[in-house]
Image (cartoon, rainbow, N blue to C red; front, side, top):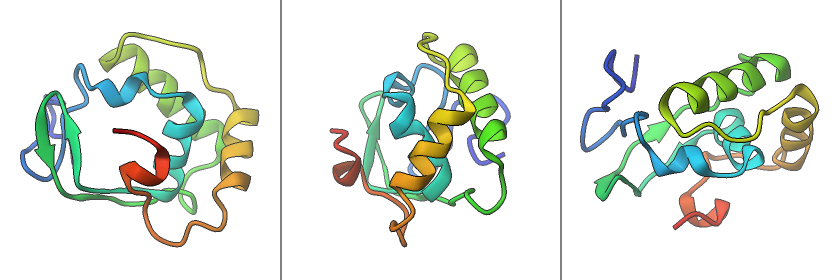
Length: 110
């Protein structure tokens, strides 16, 4: 709902999923974003966004997050390696000390 039904986003808060270079990130980075959230500023498809994606660690199970990542990458990205429950479990453990949504800099994304 936040990325809008067409998945084109709503500038300057909600970035598009369709063709987003963020979907080419490593699955562990994407899992951390879904688990702990993401806060701007970020750049997507050359456009600046400054919003907050809510964390879903307490809402979704590891297998559900892997399914979401695989669906989003296959539908809106250019495919990529599949995420699995073990990868998300490892990302959950690695990010458990993250109290605020990640920033792009914390994730090493420019």
